[in-house]
Image 1: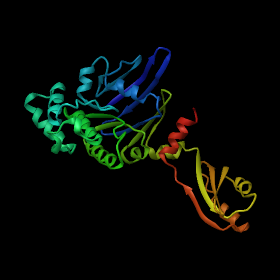
Image 2: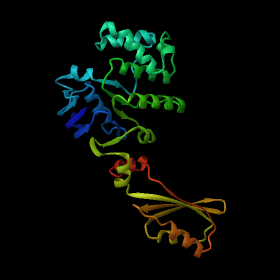
Image 3: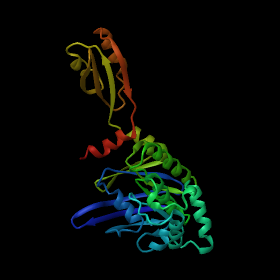
Image 4: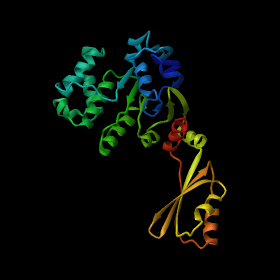
Length: 309
């Protein structure tokens, strides 16, 4: 559905996107991740026809996004980070206008608008001014706009930014439902959402692709360190003793009343729990908690992006 080959975008001497290549297959939900300034939005703007590439190519459903822009755009729906809506128009009026602009036949406009109103759960807001809607409802109108011409591909740039937790949950469920019949490329900073929704993850940093795989395989292959938390009544020398346990990289100690709270950074795949419990027993440390943190996508993201500045 999406094919990107050696794509580059330069602004003068600055290279925003640097010779990247990736594929998104039909029916996939792919998370497109990266820190601010990594090249995510630039790549999305090229895919959606808003920017021309400096070099390389990108295609949607086999149509080049630059030389066959109209055909490519017919097959995609785009929700930008800041949803551009006409706030002085009513919801239904706006969607009918957008459907006509996107080439929906006049005989089908009312049907398509009715479908997306229902799909995005805003049918009861059809006659309300967009300017009077909450941010959550405006996001739903933006999604309805992206869907009104029934595209095969959805490109969503930070679709839940600025929403409260309840609104995030609602929009997340909408996206999951929409993805049942469509390919979705979604950019977000809320990494737990990616683990919940996405079948695959692409990480971009400083304009280059750093990883492209399932979340599970990224956790397995790219996690360099682990973390363990120990709460104990430990005496002097505890930090040094814990640091000498095999697999422990370093130890940070904090105080909680009479208790010491140790955070241990570990080598990849290290499991020093039993050795630490033996050490605590030998030194007669009362232990309140011993917990090894499970790896998360946030850990992988930090490893792939922070390690290289």
